Image (cartoon, rainbow, N blue to C red):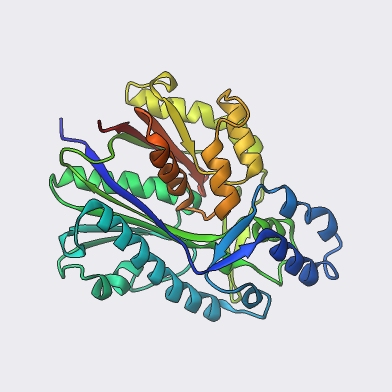
Length: 350
């Protein structure tokens, strides 16, 4: 059997503007209350979301001015490249590697358009080699960080000894819309933030954990659950079905099926690590897997401190789990547009 890819390092990065949830709620009230009759009832989500603050690519007042696709994507290109570089340098430093030692870069992002992709835009500043192989991945949403880690591990195993860098960057706040008087838009305004995470992988002795298995499941007929709409003013969030009930009804069976294909069961997992999509999603996860209320403590802490950052969020949680002492066997999982769940099985390297 080929040697498993090892996770050598995991690092996170944040944009410069820290937004208090109360300040965001006040700004949203000023903008929407007089124009949207259901706003008062919906605005409770700011207090019940489990979020205390989030980090953003731009100061709060920037979001509450007329913005089009051009302004939003310009902000994406500016901030996403900076976050890409920050997260990469941190991850390479922990792995004791240089940028010119990276052989393959997997870049995950779904909140803006970059052609050339973010890795190319950051290459000269970081010092990547001219022959580095670039693998940009778009459209995975909240599942992107976990799926990106799975892709990176398989690429590392395909070329033993090669260094694979995976970077997930999302600027969800750039999709905040003043023109969309919908429940989905208000929830998104209360829920999403910006951030990045980077991982370095290689088939070698040592490291933090071995990536022993990964898998996905996509449910037919679920394209309407989550995604983006696109128009001249930018990206608009799609939430056409309630996600927590879907999670509670379907996720455990899906993960059991993915594990079974690798000859594993949930009994072979010491710690489930999830993408904390929101407070109700965390509650649904604990119910679905018969976990005591409060078990998903790191998930709640990350949600409170950083909000839902889409793809990087599950890696922020994994970072905290590692800092607290990674259990022997960990299953990292996230759900995203498709509607899809993605998971990675990690075995701690002693």
